[in-house]
Length: 154
Image (cartoon, rainbow, N blue to C red; front, side, top):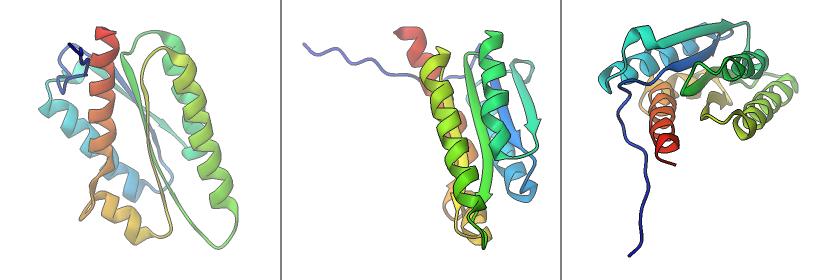
């Protein structure tokens, strides 16, 4: 018989680090609120959650690495918003944030979840930060919980 191993949506007892960028705070504050609410609804104790604020999405991987290196967390959630402008700056910041978080996730030994919005405009970002497309902060937090509980089983 095939054996299935899956994580669970139970944050009880998990220590979660959240890195959130201040740039585009009018979006990232909603991502953070959604993540915190989701963790609370799934049993996390607020004393087991730490939020680290960084200037922008480019700095997220550096802070996430420090959290992983501390060996105090069961998972790290990375939240930010990179909104396309008229220059190629978007491509560099979005790409490096994604590459940085992915590199850390491969080496950390704990789940590191990418919850950084990369959108063409403010309306798209707002839709994904609590609008009609839901809240990607919630999704990232729940993915971290599921993966942390999966790691415990593996």
